[in-house]
Length: 91
Image: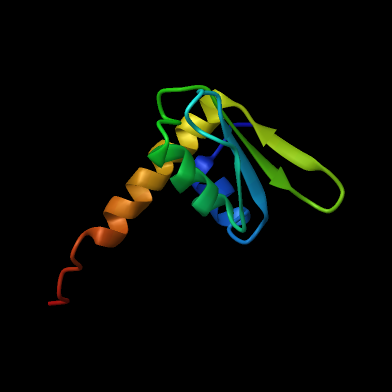
């Protein structure tokens, strides 16, 4: 099954998450949504460093390693650009 980062971001939009960027200057952090966790990872160079995001569910945790986190950061950036683009008036 292919990993769909945009779907993952929306599926866990209101789910507690934690982020660990594996660099000395960044501490781990906890968030109330996956998009917030991805934004934190992006702001702390998670796109170029090793990063791990854990989605905390009632029965189990889902851990996304660096490659999937990088894909989510790219999807998050695309989503931000789409919402920032001015809408065209209808003809």
